[in-house]
Length: 265
Ligand code: DGL
Image (cartoon, rainbow, N blue to C red; front, side, top):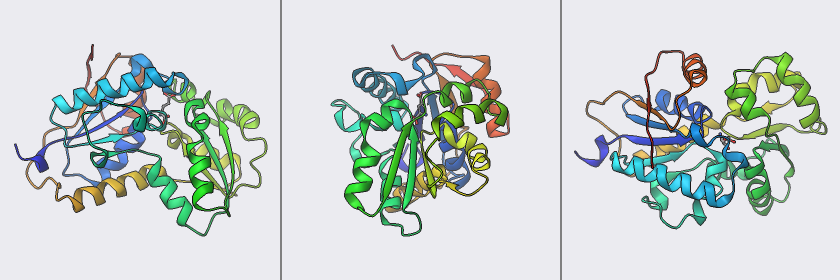
């Protein structure tokens, strides 16, 4: 099999990476994707660096064994440990993560100055968004906040305003001045409409999946890795199978999917 016709691996701790996958499927309909949701280890945002490095390494080795040509790390928490993981089976330029493309875009745009970053504890504590954005554009005013309760709520399907708004009251206290929210967790695009509605549409939530999909498209073009032949069905693998995942995933993707339980160790 030539490299261009190989699948692309995409992974996250659970449902969140599907926000990225859905955009990839829309932008790149000729590509085959193999999705891995590490539901047995969710939430990644509360795990130690050592644990995350070990999960990320195992998943990438599995995707490599399946012949994936490129990897999309569809998880901000996992993206924070990539540079510290010594035994990844992919080179840096074969991996797309979800932090640098957003930092590149926001640090060079002129429209938004006052920015709020929300993410898991792991992502916010890493300081990567804060540090990189300020270093590259010192005009930006950044507030960042860990909002860890949002992931279990989304995984549970509690994404209505009645469930979310009381939590937003606590988390978004001093965000009124912000012009843009960066959802630095791939679960959060599932509730971006509810966040915009909470702020009466006075601020915008960045549509991060679209930016990652454009990045992957550029990478495929530059390396002439676009699949031009036929493609196999996309695959969905979970380290633990739950009814909740199937229900929420199918609702989000708008179609039935078949899930396989795939143990890595
Ligand atoms: N969706 C992931 C992220 O972007 C992980 C959320 C979690 O498992 O805590 O960080």
